[in-house]
Image (cartoon, rainbow, N blue to C red):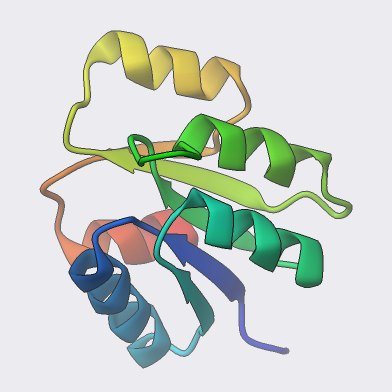
Length: 116
């Protein structure tokens, strides 16, 4: 079985890099993007099983990444993460098709479970 292909998107390069390293250590094939615009290019270029994206980013936000990913075939599961989480934003994200929602700060083990 081939490794899960994961796109990690966060405009905080340190967060994106940390998540990518963690998921790679879990045996996943990871592409890291430092922003929504870069994520849209990655989605156009290749298929992913899972997209884990920050919700609030400059220019292109997580909901736009979610919308584009949802139109991909096959559509990846999209997990949104944010430091600005409220119950309302979580519900809105799930209604728009997000698979899961993680509030920062979170434990890396939570990411592993969400992505697996």
